[in-house]
Length: 253
Image (cartoon, rainbow, N blue to C red; front, side, top):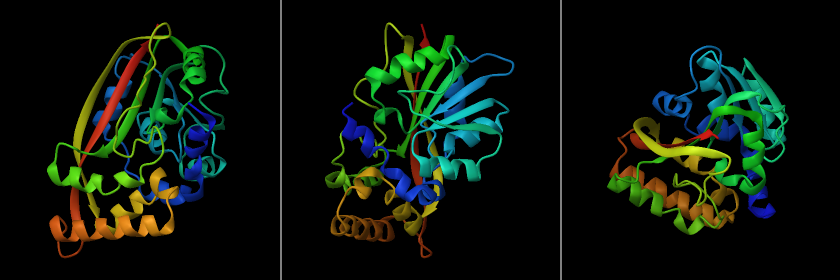
């Protein structure tokens, strides 16, 4: 991935507290799929590109030995302030601050599409024990629901960043041989209780919004508010967003 695309992935630091406040967490069923095959006993997991700690907190809650690595200093500061029970370190997918064969699993929440895969894949393989699991998770609105698909299309003109997974898609090229085998993808659907202004605050942390002009953002946000209030929200502006979490998983060869 070109350096400018990786840099775009680091624009989130400017809105790190809002990112943590408004982005959805990952459903338990999705995290369970990501960790499938890690075996019994004490499991050591790397949350890579950990952001503000959304996946980290889910992993810690399972009693796992968790290392969280994040390159953006603002995101890492929020992670450290709001997450206990994890070893939080500065680092990147391309330069992971761990020894060889140190972890049983590498979990990547909403970030694998930002990695320079040519450099990151061998590095991820290096820190994984043989047979260890690499899992990527992506949250999005469920595109199989008609109105959710319509809502997503409102932001399409703002999605100017290659690799942007605002719609929940996986990156065009996933890690494979010789480093990883047994790759497959599953998904989980789940309901998210939210509100009109909460949803706008969520999409305001998306890369397309951060890289758009104020006029472009305001235009999309106004359209989203109008759509939600007219089509799905109750009198208090509350509604349930049908969500989809894609889980891609492979095993270290």
